[in-house]
Structures are given as structure tokens and as C-alpha cells.
Image (cartoon, rainbow over all chains, first blue to last red; front, side):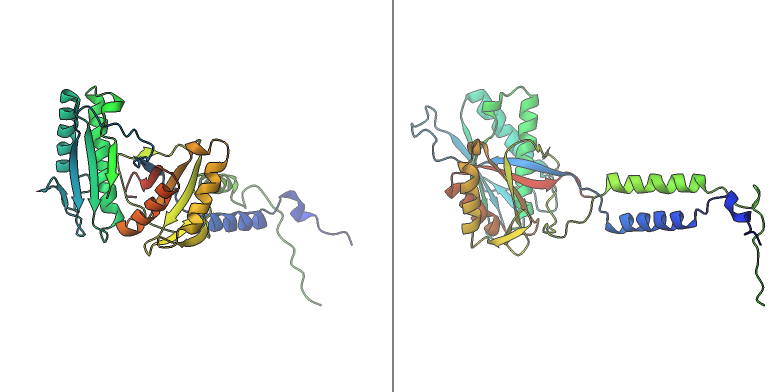
Length: 153
Length: 145
């Protein structure tokens, strides 16, 4: 008796669909949306810097970060940890940068976080510093006059 | 004798056309392949801080990556190498990298957890500085999500 040839007309796609669904589920479970990483460049002071005293006495902005995240600049309270963008500190740094550019006075930035303060608070300050430098660049301040002399204490 | 059921002859109208569904599923698979990546079991999972002014990472420079987790443990890529109190292995790695050609242009890419203490990060920075490594890139996310 000849075998029935009724099923040969169409290809059975069920196993392929099963496999494809399994692949889909596998990728959905194991995937993670790529979170773009970015970076803040922090040049640490180098020991090989010139020991010659500068012609003009530099001014230092002392930024303190308390363990609660409260930021002080030269003793004045700035933004709290709630505000990640730190507008007050950014404005203060921007003004200091403009002052340094106009008067040719070198500006040093001394950052003194509390040992128990969280890393994100330091990053908030560095973010404010970077934003201030971006603004200074837009105002025509040359790269060598930007606020780049950073000292961590 | 058991009954043998023969299937009905296939005709055009009987079976739904699965081609569009397969197309869509393949597209979804391609999407997940491109938009996602496999979970890297070894790389320490940390939550980095957000810094909107940060620049996108330039991957073409000479760099080495260290991670500080919330507890202050230290990793080189995916390998635990001590803690912020024990940076000897980290200093060895930096020293070796700096002795290679072009090593003076080395940058340390520091992935620190947002909730790591400054004390931990400071000790790691001090270890870098002790080996003459002054270029440190603090890793962050640009957006919250």
C-alpha cells in the first residue's frame, strides 16, 4: 500500500517557531539595556610641576563636602545633596573663572570631601566644575585658563 | 485493528500564513541582539553616579579599568584585587602598564559605586598618584535610567 503523500505539500514550521521563540525568550531574559558610560576627567596634581613660584599669587577656592552631602565653598553654604546639578556652586565657580581670566590670577580648586561622604557627592562637585568650565569655554576663555588646577585633600 | 487517522489534505485556506509572525520574531531577536548584551557574570555590578556634564568615553586611548564597589572592594576589570586598604596589586598593574611603550599616556578609568565613601576612592587615587599616575577618569552615567 503506498504511503499517503498528503502532508508533503507544506513544510511544518512548528519546530522552527518553537526554536525561534526559545531564542527570543533567552535574549529577553539575558539582555540588559546598555547603559552608556561617560567620564569626568580629573587631572591629579603632578609631582613634576615646576617648583618656580608663580608670578601672580594664585587664589584658591576651598570646596568642602560634608558627610551629609552639603557643599560649602569658601565657608559659604552652597547646594545640598538633593540638587545633583549644583547650580549655586556652578555659578560661584563660573564667576571665579571669569575673575581669573580677567585679572590673570591663577585659580586653584581645592576639594575636601569628608572621608565618610559618598562618592556621588564628589561627582556632583566635579560635574558642577565641568559645567562651569564648559560655560567658560563658551565665553571665550582659552583652555589654559579654565579651572583645571584641582587638588583633592 | 487501531484506527489510522489520515490528515486532511492541506489546502491554502486551512492554515494561517505564519510568515509575517516569523518576520516579526526575527526582527525582535535582532533588536535584542543589538540593543542588549549578555550579562557579564564577572564584572562587578555597581551603580555609578550620574554626571550630566560628563563626556562620552573615548575607547581609543590607553587605559586600564578599576572598580571600587560600595564596600570598598577593588577590582581590575572583573578580577578582585583587594580593597581600598590593600592596593598593592593595583599598583603593580599600573606599574606594568606604565612600563609598556606609550605607558606614560595611560589613563585609569575608575568605576566607583555612587555609595562608596570618599575615603575608599581617596585611597585608590593616592595609590595611583604614588605610581605617578595622575590621569584618572571617573566613570559615571549621563542619565539616571
